[in-house]
Image (cartoon, rainbow, N blue to C red; front, side, top):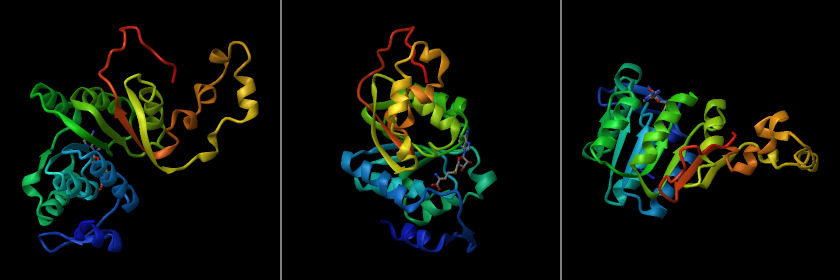
Length: 244
Ligand SMILES: C[S@@+](CC[C@H](N)C(=O)[O-])C[C@H]1O[C@@H](n2cnc3c(N)ncnc32)[C@H](O)[C@@H]1O
């Protein structure tokens, strides 16, 4: 791992180019950064996109591995300068990756359609921004259209209710499969005998919460970070729907 990242994970701080000490927070932890790097390495991904820059920790981890593969990274964050003092950009520049990262200081719902219009394609995406269902559904809608076949989208913070609910929906898309999960939180959600019995009763789809009929465990999303792989183009019928 990059010496900047090694040092940051050891000290939880870094010195920016103005010689200010930046105490980091809200970052993707070391184990999860390694998880992202392993996915990129194993699949030889070369074109990545990320939403949520902050102090640039996951950005640096992704960029390091993408550049090792001869590729480039793109990151979107509306609040990089207003909320984070531009320190994410500063870290990327200090680490020597300024020419390898394109940065958009805008809301994702503004940037993503422009990338689609330009015909840009990506093979890896990491989402670590807002935790709101509707915002992230819009992000996923566009990311799906600019993601290459066999490309992978990783969602962070799947333990937040809005993101968990979104994952319950998109994990059931016929053209996506769960590639892997990081840091299992709720391994006990395997349906027990009683749960299985209840499901045999009539009208369960109307009487029971969807989370009981189909648990997060069964959907493969009972963790903090979930990687979904696009296995095919979207060929769903106009009236396609699943309960979630
Ligand atoms: C948890 S932090 C990201 C941490 C970063 N991935 C890391 O590992 O250091 C969340 C980031 O998302 C950004 N953000 C929140 N809502 C956003 C939105 N709608 N569009 C783009 N960025 C957003 C925030 O400004 C913040 O930088």
